[in-house]
Amino acid sequence: MVSLAALSLALPNAEPLANPFALGGRAVGGKCDHNGIKGTCEKSCQGGFQTVGDCPNDPTKVKCCMFRSCTVKSTGVVGGCRNVGSGGNCVGGHFVAGLCPGPDDVQCCVPNKSPPP
Image (tube, rainbow, N blue to C red; front, side, top):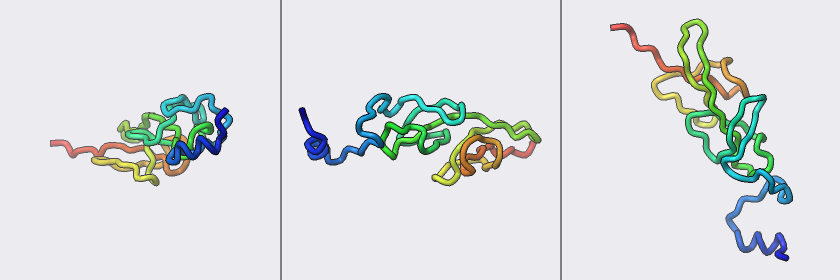
């Protein structure tokens, strides 16, 4: 039987598990859930928003990545929920608070409307 110490020496760059004995579900791409919104456990989240703590059996850098649309009621413009605080990108648009679930830094990225011709 290989000891945990021997494994850590053999894999010096491996990230530690939150719970080394809870191997079930430990995989990037595994399913996660945040307040009823389904997502996948990922190291980076492109085009969606992420939450911490919803992938408890994974290394700390793995977060729950979810995709959800949002609509500005006054204009009917549809956007997508993204993280503002962690370098969220909203090129060609702007963030609107209060339309997305999750922490305060998850906001709706809506496209800027072009003026009519």
